Image (cartoon, rainbow, N blue to C red; front, side, top):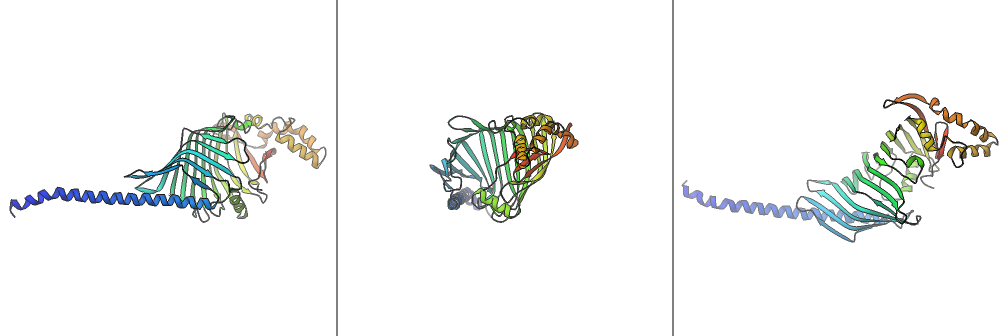
Length: 372
């Protein structure tokens, strides 16, 4: 073949290359637009399913972008109208941005812009949540998730009008992962909660000082994750004999360290039942915070328990009240002596009996039911 035969080919190959690149670009653009349309339709279908359950979500404006390597859905001034639920409420958040990578379409990451405003019919003033950063990551499909991770930094929950802080935390992390089954059918779910510098100043003296927590549990007995009131999920859980297996839990507040493991279920009346094996270091510092070192004081769990004993058998409550100081002082001796992270500790049972909570033989109070 003569040299002249190669000249036309040499002149043609750049044109061929450009044509191929253009076709690939057009194909990629078409594929992206198709995926973006599918994502928008998936969001619309999810909203329709939620609306059937009385949860209506909307955006003041919604846009889709992220071309060429991602799909980015922006929802400005997002609102959730949950007025048809058993506990009606309305939720408003400034902006939500959800991003799905083209290479990993089953992982959706969303960033939430503060503040979030929560209004309920029961509460007088709305509750406002603020944070420095909040991110939610969903693995799987919106209708059939496999795992959800929530991470919030510098969180604050307050009453809008009074500015009263209900909850603060440097870091909050919550993860939910389906171990067996699927979201629509008999899911067994692992839940992990991590708190750093968390406090609820108005709830109780025991929660006023910051705590760090790392808790892992497995929830068994759920029927599904279909949109329905939370109380209905609890009822189904109770009927199925479901339980929450707390596989590990560590909570620290100052020098007080507690670890626990055990199982909790729901009684027919909707209260918690079960027992946790609780190991506490520096228990003597915890008792004053719980208010059980002063059994004579009014409005304490122990005093309420003694009054109940008096109603059942006159004089019995007063006898128990007189001996309560010795009971409290000897609580560390009643439990099994051990060591926790290099500190002297004691093992005592934390019991839940149809909502009544007690630490060893000492009552702590009555928890409200999960449903009525």
